[in-house]
Structures are given as C-alpha cells and as structure tokens.
Length: 200
Image (cartoon, rainbow, N blue to C red; front, side, top):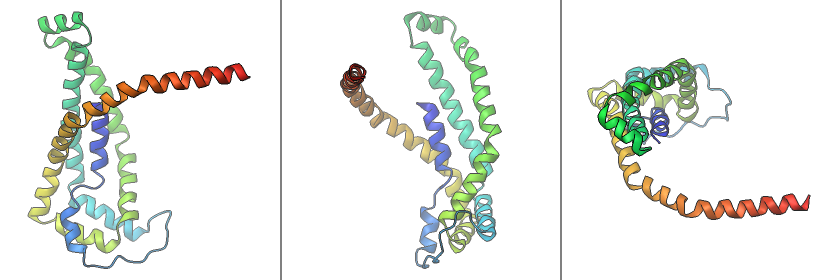
C-alpha cells in the first residue's frame, strides 16, 4: 500500500499547489491553441521555468525521502506481523527485520533515481500541454514570491497527511468491500471459465 502512496505522491508533484496561482490567471482568457502532439519550444521553456520556480528538485527529493521512510516502517510492521514467529523475533530483535529489508529500500531508491530524468522529461511535457504559456508565466511569478515558496515547500507534507487520512478512513472500507465481494466474483468467473472449457 505504501508503494502506491509513493507513486501517488510523485503524481501529485506534477501539479503542486496550483490553486493559489490559478487565481492570478483566472481572469485571463485561455489562448486558443490547436491540438498538439508535442508542445512547442516556448511551452517547454515556460514549463521548465515554472518547475524551477516551484523548487521541483527539492520537493521531489523531500517527497521521496519522506515517503520511502514511511514505506520502510510499513514493510517492517507488515513482516513482523505476518506470523507469530516473526512477531516474537521482532520483539526480541527490534532492528533485525529493518536491517534485512534495507537492501530492498536501496534497490527501490536506485530504481527511482535511474528513471528520474525520464519522469521529469514527461512532467515538463504534461505542464506544457495542459497550461498556456501565459498561465505558466503567471504561475512562475507566483512561485518566485515568498508565499509561493511557502506553498510549494508545504505541499508534500499536506499531501502526505491527506493520504494518511485517506488510508485510515477510506482504505479499510475499500478492503472490506473487496473482501466481501471478491469471493463471489471469483466464483462467478470460475463458473464461466469452467462452462467455456466444457463448450470447447
């Protein structure tokens, strides 16, 4: 579940806190633009400037470190609670499971690092396709202010805490629905597969 949270946090990095700057451009009519498969050079330049003004690199690093730290704790708890034997082992050797899982954390971080440039390359194009140059310039001006930087730096924490609440309130209910309905769906599907096999 926490790995999905990491990916969700990364998704949020594509549109961090555009609520406030949107006020600045709300009164501006959106430029009529033809459908573009690839953004123009001007759009790419504006998108990169906006990402720089949003301190994208720092926010990315902070988000990854925070999310992976929480994910590591979740994995330790999941393993420790997977059986009575592991629970006893964890009780008598508190750091042993975390140490055993450390290589996995390193591998995941390496994977994220290896694909960071590819990820950011696509994020630039998402901005450039969705926002006009004027909108991105207005957002860039906002993010360069003290208030803009405060919004940017606080957004990952806001998103993380919101996701925790979502997992606490919505997560268990989703799992309950799945657990109640999945066996029925699986049985129905198994019956259909069996009937199809007989018909061949």
